[in-house]
Length: 175
Image (cartoon, rainbow, N blue to C red; front, top):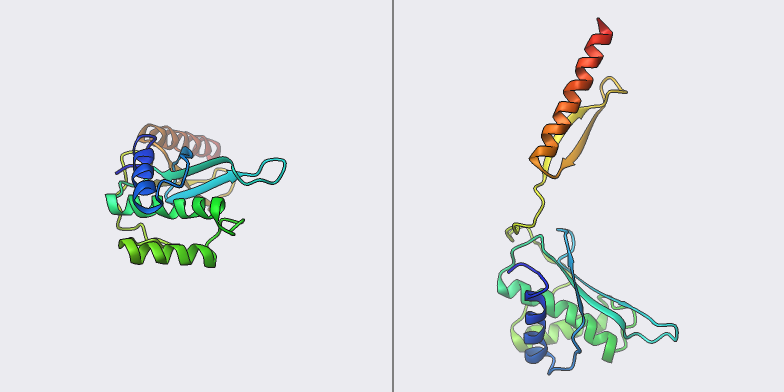
């Protein structure tokens, strides 16, 4: 299950019905293109300090989650949302209120809500950028090397061509 603007609302509505008794209004949605964060809850305070403004749940489209993991991530973000609206957690962090509610949901519904998650076993989605690395020699320093990520094979070919061109120019100057 890849996070998108179709799968996220459907999972939210399902989780809101099953785990939160329809108490949470539908938030805005966002997609993150990252492997570092699986989900995130965002909000802004208005001028008067009230908390209910621009509430948004974001999920990463980097992974192809199984349904159970997708649900656990959504419920994790929904706990932040619930505590913002009805709890005492103004910071929306992983404090005592969050941990207590996560534990209660885990025990009552058999979920696996955690504050950290090892995503190394989750397959990457088709949207995940290819993590290709190449090595080039810096033209300004004789023995310096740098490593740069490459987004596509055509970009890699262009960068290799540029490196070859610089090496050829350097060889001409040496002659």
